[in-house]
Amino acid sequence: MNAKLLYLTLLIGLFSLSSYGQNNDVKKLDRIIRKDYQIIDCTISKISDAAVEYSLPNETLTISLDVAKIARIDFSSGRTQLFESTEPAANQANEVVEETIHAQGSPKMNTNMIAVLPIPYVNAETLASSEEMAKFAQNDIYNKLIDKSSNIFPLTVQDLRTTNSLLRKAGIDYKNIDEIPIDELEQILGVDNIIAAKVSYTIEENRTSNTYKSGETKYSDDKTKNQNYSSTSDQTEKQYKYNVYFDMYRNKEKIYTHTRQPFFTMKDSWMDAIQYLLKRSPIYTK
Image (cartoon, rainbow, N blue to C red):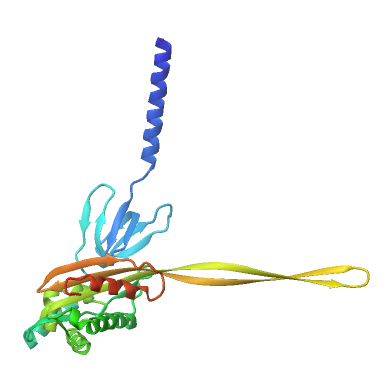
């Protein structure tokens, strides 16, 4: 019995050491949370005042990321580091805003008026943004509000020409709109309600092949001959995966925030998500 007990004890010990070794082989990763809401699980090798260098799991390639694009890093050790905005463009934009407000004075505040900000429309993989789509998305929300003006009473919608003109004078566009505090935007636009949204997307391509077959039988005096024909066609279908971020402010306070992924993956599916979020916002009444 003692020999058996000793053998069982040794076996359990070896199993525990093996499990411990396997658990240690699973390396914990650092996590980078970008300002455009992307999350990157990686191994960070270097941090400087200008950039963070990291590599993805199972890869040796080192990638450099501007710290101005990072909101927070959660290290594998459990420590968290926050990053303040250091982009020169953002700093310049804030300076222009302050100078504009100081030079022009605060415009007349229009009570119960809502302004729609330009909507950043960003490819989450390449970080490419489109001015044309930013204006198109802004115009889409504006038109939806105008069409349902009776459902948002007593609010009225600020004309887009007025909104964009005031923003342009303050040095603000779709590229730096996220860097300007809401209270300053309310001052610049002279409104007490603001809609701020963002559309982030990725594109996936699905390729399918279809083969068509046909046959023909020919007869002669002494034999029968079969001839078969086939053709193959390839089709590529693009699928758009959207995240629509939607915020609504009143008198500097955020009164509604929501993120939605459209059910469909067509190119204009983000518009359905905007429609859904607007109808469920606190300004909309049936």
